[in-house]
Length: 432
Image (tube, rainbow, N blue to C red; front, side, top):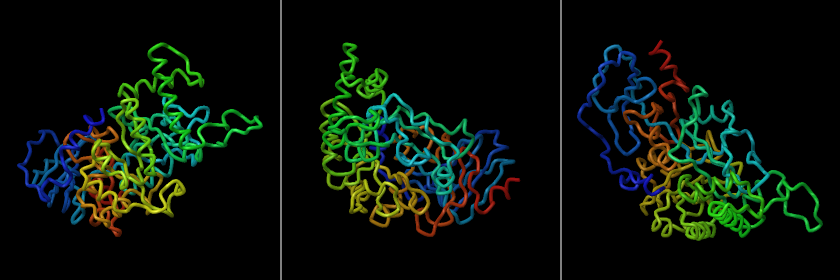
């Protein structure tokens, strides 16, 4: 269940670790002749722990050790990052990039498609992934598209590296339900049914209102229960494979997100979840500040963002007044949350979103955690990415200044120990 999955995040309050750690030197494996050693003025683990200076030792694509004053393995290749800052690779838990389809990457034959896989429309060669890697975003969860009321399963991938190694397996599959205007507004060729009839069935889709979205959601789950319990076919022609997939949502084998933006949709999500005994995560949650008490009382994790008005393709679906202080308020209420840039990259990307959260009151350590540790946990990827810890993937970002400041940018990005961005040529120069 979601509460169990995030137990560590709920009990380990961001920022509780000391600013500078001086742990005892860990024992290192004997054979590290081919290891890569990165030294930096500050090494931020992601959970609030900071080593000043710090060392990260990498071998075979995984982190071997992190700390201060670690012995340099004989024969290890040393990357001296000088005064730079080193962090885990950033994780976006609700990305909308990589499909090369502005609108309509979801199957339009039905409003309920949890049996399908978003990975089937992912373009691993997309230039959007190159930009994400340059931004320091090393892992993304590409969420199902909002033109479906209940989406296809999302897909988690690294933003660079050998294609065969880029897809990750979350702890559980994940689908999302979308409540609000987007299910009718984003569907390819979607239009309201005509009273005069005619037109292709795939274009005349429900819903066209918020109440329609809630009805489609409820009907699909009730049909799935009837199919599970009595083998009864759906009166709407819902695919049996879709009903079986929804059975996994009902049992908790597949996790659920509710994509909402406006406050009234938060209330509908809670009502629907209570009806079916579901746990879920809020995605985007633009007006979360108006429902903080409910979110905190129910311990609902939140994937928040983006907050912007002019640089987003989907700006028309976002609040007219971005809630710039919401990350700070979520933290103050003890709500587990992470940040997302959705369809944004570059100047509108995840680092920029994190910088805005810091500017509007979020503690810097908590901000880093919101795009590393907690983002990975919410996406079900914390056994692979999100922290600098032994055994996890060696996804690292070296910044030329304090992370998330306007003038700072990644100068070296490693994914699974391989350099995918090396602005200064440091890795090539020191590791011929």
